[in-house]
Image 1 (spheres, rainbow, N blue to C red):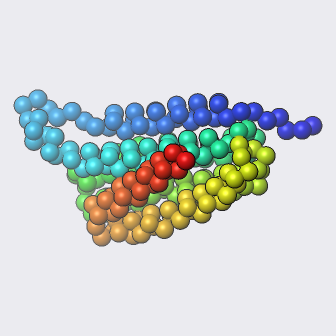
Image 2: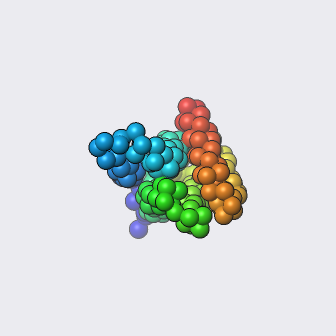
Length: 203
């Protein structure tokens, strides 16, 4: 019996819901200062704001990239649906280490801060591997793509997303000595990925 093909509307709809929930969970971790000391309380919470910004840009970049990829996919097989779930696994994990980073930078010691930033790398690695695997699967299934030229896009995408592991590993190593610098590197990686994904979506 031939495998039944379906369009990608349900994949994109479900994925958008996961992205929306993940971003909402990020903002729920931002605390409200006690009355009478709002200014001081807001200043004390700056690590949480920096962690939030990094996580928000990370999820935003993945969402834009997801749109760029699936505008080039016209139909989906079960394997593509499952591989997309691994992308969503990485996205759904982002709020947890974000909360850890905010708490550790505010109240923790160097070991706590380093550990939280190492944990933050886990979703990034999952996402890189998931995008690589998904892109390679689409290269092997050109009949699922909207145009023949999209096969080349998927090849480039596989290489590009896999290479994001390199700066992520470097940032993870930096976390053991300079946690704030490591968080800044994570933010730069996310901002670069968002910018390049936005350019690809425009073409």
